[in-house]
Image (cartoon, rainbow, N blue to C red; front, side, top):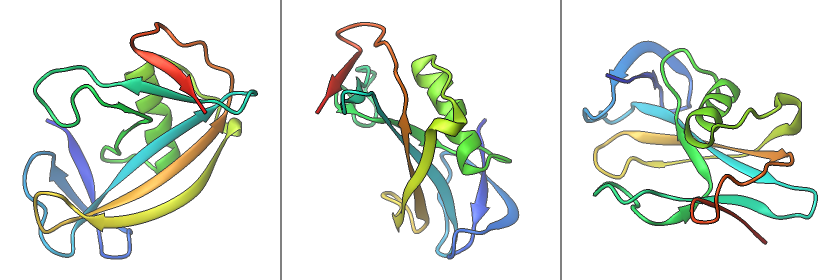
Length: 134
C-alpha cells in the first residue's frame, strides 16, 4: 500500500494521508514529480514504458512519479530516479523549474506537478529502454 500526503488547494500538506488508488475528494491533492535529465550535448533522457496493460503503456516519456508520504519534492525526484532508472541523481545538478496543477484525471482531486531539470551525464542502460532525444 502506497500512502500520499494530502495537499490542500494551495499545495500545502494537510497532515492527512491518502491511500493510492482510492478517489481524492474536491479540495484534496497530491504531489507528482517529473524529471528531465539533460546531458552536455543538450539531449534529454527519455524512457519507454513497459507494456503491462496499464496507464501510458509503450509510450516514450521522461521519468516521474508520485511523492509518497513524508517526501518533499526533491526527495521524491531522487527516489523515483533510483526506482525507475536505477541512477543516482546529484541534488546539486537539479533545479525545480516549473510547477503546475490540474484536476486529477479520474476523481475530484488535484495533481500538483513539480518539474525538475537535472544537468547530468547518464549512460542509457539499453537502446530499447532508454534514449536521448533533442
